[in-house]
Image 1: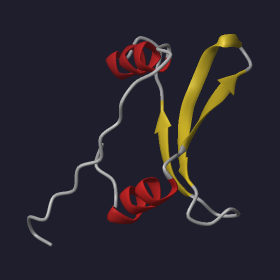
Image 2: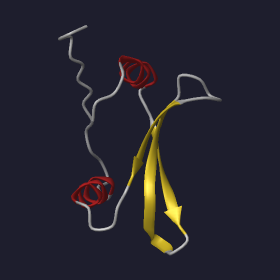
Image 3: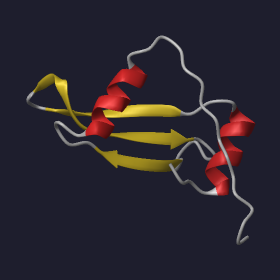
Image 4: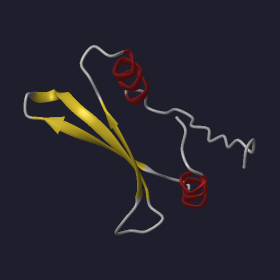
Length: 82
């Protein structure tokens, strides 16, 4: 996922970020998407909005990832063109 340097810096400084699932009224196993929040400001965090589509490979990958008890996340920043 390509994100801004502000998001990477906020995640590194805070050592955390939060993922919120956007539920669907169809039931607890159904989700419309997710929002990833990086709290540089408690009232207005930096966010990444990711809609999800049934049967999509990304949704399958995310479900597999978020079902694990632990996983590592790496932030990479390109300096090319900056």
